[in-house]
Length: 182
Image: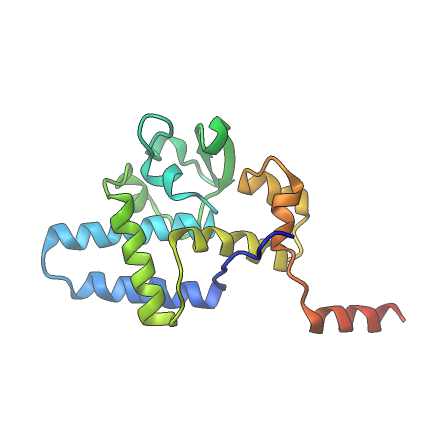
């Protein structure tokens, strides 16, 4: 049996996203302000598009950084993600043209990981990673009753079994559903 992933809810994401904005606004140094804004853009892409950290900031010569040309009106084309497969994900509504103009994000993977982990610890008292944002995307879609094959496609999973980990059993929903049947 597969271990359940660590997830973050929409409300929890909004809390850490707001805290990141607050940190950005309080920062005086322009270069640090830009870096934190880049972290926020990456967080938005991780949670609201389900993108992997490597698909945003690139990984060696295997996976290219996300470029402005890949961002369209309603979606984002991910070129050669994990497994060297292309896929399409939704464009976050909050990813405005100013944010797109900041692509590619010139930030370090480890620094981004540290920033997200720090926010999780300080704001949520939870041990999270950047990948937790992606798990939140999958979990939120499953909780919104999106068909499993759609979630599979958006997550870029080759096996439906991998996507199935996002179907958490909710006892209250199960009881209510059973009551409706009888």
